[in-house]
Length: 158
Image 1: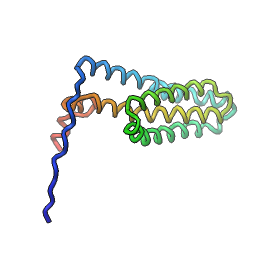
Image 2: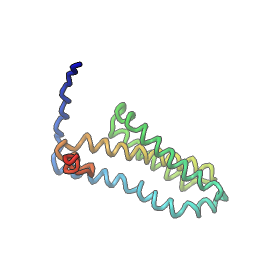
Image 3: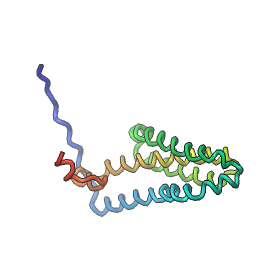
Image 4: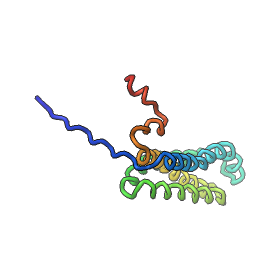
């Protein structure tokens, strides 16, 4: 049986200048800072916060809800980014994370804290996926592996 293969279309070269690409990359890295700080601070402060809210027994719910929502946000963000635009989704994800952060700080009960951390996790997961998609859109294919942290050399050796 003979099968014909069609050549894959080449992605268009990005019209972004090197200076603008650098500015975009710095902005995307700065968008990750609050999420990374949250992970660091939450791991340290959550036992104390849960104890203050008389919900130390529910500490696992706080962490699990965040991680589960983050996983869901990661999966859903790819499709939503295709439907509504990656930049728009990135902004929505950052707003969701920010609102979740404010609600986490204002949570009067352990149930409210779990809900706020869930919103925060959803925003964090969508942010990670959106950032990678924006990098893929903006960076030209020639510098793509470098902007994504992978090495072109390792690809050639396979």
